[in-house]
Image (cartoon, rainbow, N blue to C red; front, side, top):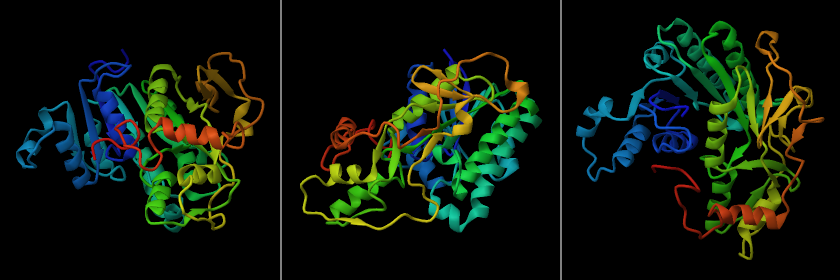
Amino acid sequence: MIIDKKTILVTGGTGSLGKVLVRRLLSGDKIGTPKKVIVFSRDEGKQHDMRIAYLDERFKTDEIIYKNFSQALEFRIGDIRNYADVRSAIDEVDIVINAAALKQVPTCEYFPEQAIKTNALGVQNIVRAISESNVKVETLIGISTDKAAKPINVMGMTKALQERIIIAGNIRNPDTRSICVRYGNVIASRGSVIPLFHHQIEEGGPVTVTVPDMTRFLLTLNQAVDTIFHALGNASAGEIIVPNAPSVTVMNLAKALVEDKDVDIEITGIRPGEKLHEIMVSEEEANTTSAKGNYYAIRPMLPELINDDFVPALNKEFSSEDNVLDYKGTRDLLEEHNLLPGMERTKESGELLV
């Protein structure tokens, strides 16, 4: 099993994805049972809430913090932007999964220097720490986004840089397999459109849609974690793993959530930095993309990392404009994951440990 008896560092592990990822890692789900999972983040409060929930403690006493380093789930306060923090966290780690990010498009547009520090320079700190440590890190995985393909906003640009930094890390650290996963909007993650629509419906509306024909890829949190697990088990050095995910129009998404409620839908217009359709694999990348099960693998550009023949799986870009679910398909997807208003939420449909 891939992660049996391994120590795994999850940077940004208190976010929406990080929480579900940590639960799945500790459950022994599909790929083995790790020796330890270390959550590395700068938010003390979120770490404490996650620790309480994991230990299922009734009383939130300081005593559980003193047991931190003896648990299978360990928490470390630190900032990916600070090299010394990253360097100390890397010791005795076998696998690093980087989920730390500034991911809100408007925030990154207003504070581009902050996005660069976290999304690009923070990843460079990881690559450097692996290079300068005495520990052999087996695998580094970077979590990327469809906005990194033909980026037009700061978030996508910095995530594209992250991909390149990680891929080039295979040259600097040849004993570490450095790979990425790239996917679209994660259903019910913090800051995504579905929680926003739920809130707007609860408040009586209106539900705000930017452009009716805008399309977006949609994955559940668990499908996002499945993509990471697939990469752990199947990706070669320098590859970017992409799920073959469905897409929806934003208008069908809004209509499926509103249904017959007396709630208006308001068209607000496209926002700065947004695309009408997202791209998961660009036209230029399509020529070097192979199929691996229900996933695509984008081969690295660096010739030193290309060592096998392959059959291209795409002859054009993979866009959210392709294979768009109709209204019924959109509603069925939401219902399948308990995301329609009024449905009881489960750990499978949203965040873990909250």
